[in-house]
Image 1 (cartoon, rainbow, N blue to C red):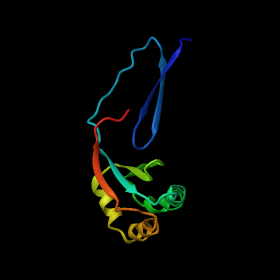
Image 2: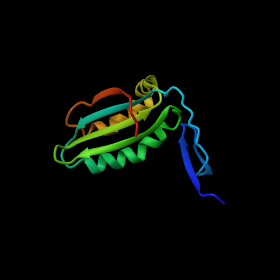
Image 3: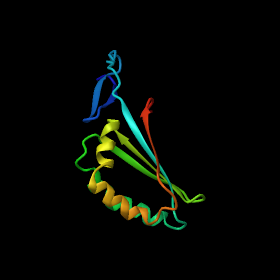
Image 4: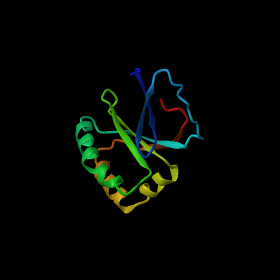
Length: 132
């Protein structure tokens, strides 16, 4: 039996693992990349409120995005020295974030966060050009 190599392909739907003999040529297929977007939100927050905001994000975000198929994931990050949080949300389509942002559910959820904000959120929508 010849040794096997594994090639893993990641698609939006699933991960596909392919095994073939090591001496067999692996044919690669290419396709046009699918545009993806990072919605980056930076917020100066009240000193000492980062742990409470992280817990609130963890408690509310899943239900908030559950019905949005284009939502791919998020990172809640914090700079404790500057009392600033940054949320990086990964979306398949930029306009899908707009649908969420304009919803009553989003506005109600954000009102829970706003009591801990020391300034207004700064939001930018960025196309992801390279993902490694």
